[in-house]
Length: 124
Image 1: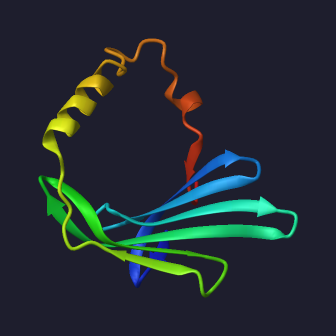
Image 2: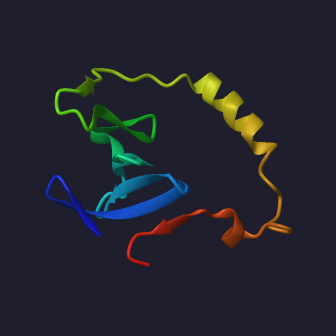
C-alpha cells in the first residue's frame, strides 16, 4: 500500500529485467491507475520517469485521464498535458477488438498463468 496525492493506492511492481522495473499505482477506491513509475537501475543510481494520471472522465463507457503529468529526476523537466476533449473512433475500436479476439485462446489449456506472470504485488 502506498499514498498518491493523499489517497491510498495499491502498488503493482513489474520486474521487466534485472536492471529495470515498472511500478503501477491503483487508487484503492476507484481502481483507476493514478501513477506509473519506470525505473532503470544504473551504476550511478536509479533513473525514474513518473506519469501521474488524474481528472478521469467517462468517454463512451471508458474512464480516461484528462490530465497527465510526466516528470523525471530533473526538477525542471515536468510536462503537464491537459485534454479538453477526447474522442473515441468506435469503428477503429471495433476492428481492433475483433482482430484481438483471434489471438485470445478459447480455453486455458496449456497456459501456465504463474509462469506467464512476471509481476508481483508489493508487500507479498
